[in-house]
Image 1 (cartoon, helix red, strand yellow):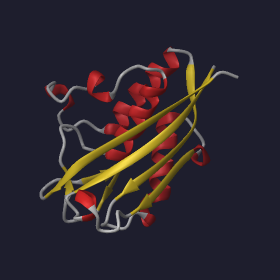
Image 2 (cartoon, rainbow, N blue to C red):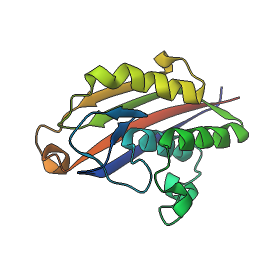
Image 3 (cartoon, helix red, strand yellow):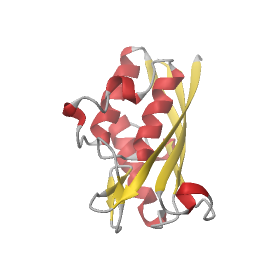
Length: 159
C-alpha cells in the first residue's frame, strides 16, 4: 500500500462581530475568527495537511485571499474541493488527527459534530476523523485569547 502523510497548521485572530466557526460549526462566543473566508482554522489545517501530503502547495495557492470570490467562503465547501483534487490524483484520506488550541470557549460540546461534519464532506466514517481540543495554558497569543489555532495530520492512501 502506498501512503503519504501531511501536516497542517493554521491560526487566525479573534475579533468582535465575526462568527466563530470550527469544523463547520458556528460556536456561540463573543469573539470570532478574522479571515478572508469563514476563517475555520480546523478545516484550513486539515486542507493544508491533505495538500501537503501530495506536495500540492497550500490553501492560499488554491483559494488566495486576494481573490474576492473566496470572501466569506464556507471552508467545508473548500474542503470538498481539496478532497476532489486529491481524489483526481488517485488518493483518498485514510484518517485525520487534529487538535484545536483555544482558551475559550470550551470545545468539548462541539467535537462530535465537528467530526461528523468533516467526515461527511470527506465521505469518511466519523472514527476516521480525530478532533481534539486543548488550551495553551494562557501562554502566547492563543493563551491570551488573541487567536485560535489548529494542527492536523492526514494520512492519504493511494486508490
